[in-house]
Length: 359
Image (spheres, rainbow, N blue to C red):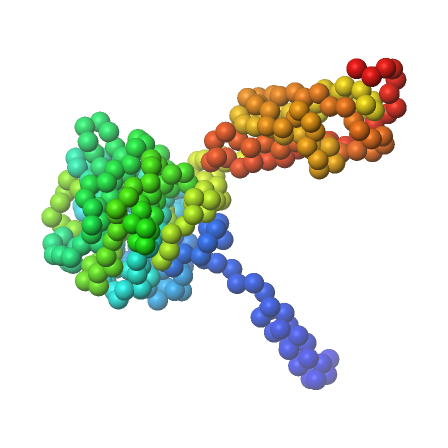
């Protein structure tokens, strides 16, 4: 091939590559985080004797030091193991306001966490509360934990302005959870989330201060509170310099839940007897994999009397075809548990002339 043709092909190829969309660090997340750690990604955490955990958003230019040797494990796609007895964790140096590890005001924090045993007070797995590794100093920002109170274990948050705020749902041992909170500094509102769904009511009069002297701790590496440390596993950790919506939080869980033992998919099958008759009553049946509401459609239009039918395993609806010939009937399922993804089903057949009088 002539050199000029080679040059032309190189230019075309370069243009095609430059036109490709940018792939985010974790395509499963619905919005781009400002900071992301991922133990399942070798670009974020080396799988052989890891020393640092690297931020994927900055392309590894931000890194946290592993303290007291959290260990990598390939279980569940790749995790870090934290030991409460050893005060293991990761620390990121204090940073300016607006830095990826120090959101300027409103924020979202989200992490996939599994607890394997409980500490006697807090089980802190994320904080910007301390000004040194030994665990002392002020001012404070936040610390996020599951608090132990007798036999109860619920989400718990301290912030600059408010102490000892708790969620409502029980957290169990040896179970993966996507645990999160959002703070809207403008409206001073806090929301807890578990597996993409809000945990309890929105809590008022909560804010934070983005202090520049606090370390970001993932896990709890400080040495002065053995009764507060996190004992378990962590897979992913993310921060946003904004408040995610409830639909975005749910989308994050749905997109990643299958990797942590949550089957969020549903299935629906719609059926009727072959060749239904025009303007005669025909019974449509939908079979669903999860309880919810089913709506039936003829050619994209809701069939009268067939909207939001309650279904546990099956549901039926009477339908009188309003046209002859080839026709499509669809059904949609909205699961009762919003953690599951809605689904649709369809059937296609030919509608025959009515064989007898209308029913």
